[in-house]
Image (cartoon, rainbow, N blue to C red; front, side):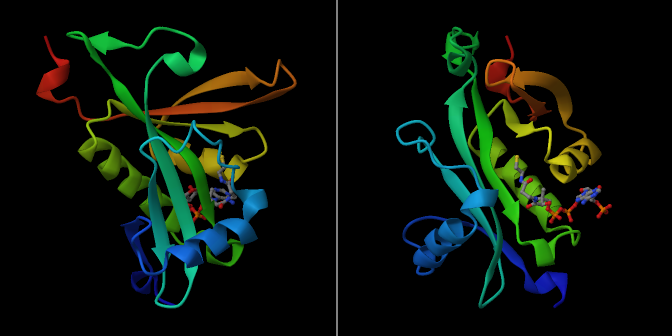
Length: 170
Ligand SMILES: CC(C)(COP(=O)(O)OP(=O)(O)OC[C@H]1O[C@@H](n2cnc3c(N)ncnc32)[C@H](O)[C@@H]1OP(=O)(O)O)[C@@H](O)C(=O)NCCC(=O)NCCS
């Protein structure tokens, strides 16, 4: 199948194929982070990579202020909280990997985050997700190693700064 037959679009619950996405999520739960009720459904956006008959990948992001997640005050400019888009789920079916679909999903996530006036696009990825790390590093994300789970696990926190608009400048 040619790559141009794989479309990437934003879907919401009005999409006629929404139940197919829910099924995809159920089928690949192990590769997808669980949804944390009440936290990561805030302004949740979903990008879907699909052919006419099959979903082959997805990326879900949420829009949150920068700081409160780490029990710190929100970062503000001119009394306005800066927002960040955080990627919560990112997955491509194994048989469709290394064909640029993950990169296309990330590029579209950057566009969506910009359109939502986010200051940055971020994600955290545990140490074992090496292919995800390679992809993000190849795209120019800034990277910060971090401990998680009280020091029992570690991974990489990635930040992509987005184009600063006039609202952010003094
Ligand atoms: C991470 C993931 C979404 C990448 O999807 P993908 O469609 O294969 O990614 P792409 O084809 O766009 O890869 C883009 C670049 O990333 C790097 N990359 C991706 N997979 C790689 C691998 N297995 N080994 C080395 N580099 C890799 C390469 O630089 C690649 O560019 P190239 O193919 O031109 O060399 C996919 O591997 C996946 O679903 N993994 C399991 C779930 C996961 O880890 N999600 C992230 C959770 S935090």
